[in-house]
Length: 300
Image (tube, rainbow, N blue to C red):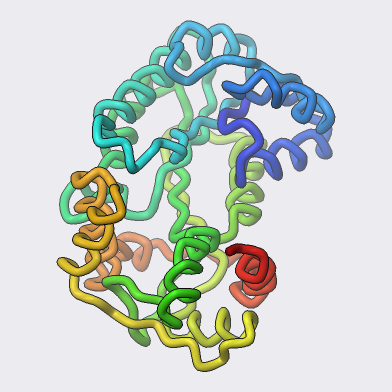
């Protein structure tokens, strides 16, 4: 198959490209950075240098593909006070819609997120619901899988500074209830399956690697970094919001993150996941804890 991937050589797209090449597919990887071309070609893939903001570039790159993998980069600068995240993601989603229509591609796998089942009460994740709605407007003969991964393991790196400074993990959700977490390696494996398996219509697929409570998670990570008594502390929404804004974050984005976390605490974020719980992937939290410890021990 001829498959086009967005996401450059990111956490998901790199292992995805590696696996697809290993399976004998002709893979093109889109990147906005010219310096990535050699790395992409070293994997055995073809590099297409351009941006998601260029709808015609996307359409020409998608032309002739049997399937495409579409994602909206999370690399946006959340500390940019001029960033309108909804406007940005709307533009990219419409560009994908245009490119798929113009190129004639009939199979798309789209990276969405847990929480995309609703447009209310999910905070910053509301843009994924909007993105899905835009792509749902494509003709019915375009087969689409919306991948909805849960909370990424690597987002836990964001707690390293607090652990080092305060000796705790602190945010506005936590407790003993199980929460789903995912490795990008398991997402890549699921996307590979979707891209290479014949399918017609539209569907949603959740992806998770492990289900662990925040208190259990603190113990696992704490043990890995030599702090077995590490605690996960739940703080008020307002306290988290104020600390984010004080750090310079875009206030609207900060509010969206706080609302997203609050939905995690109430269970709203996982309500559709719980109705459609997937088989768990291979990479467990104990596996990630080793990577967490390595980063923790080498970060100032």
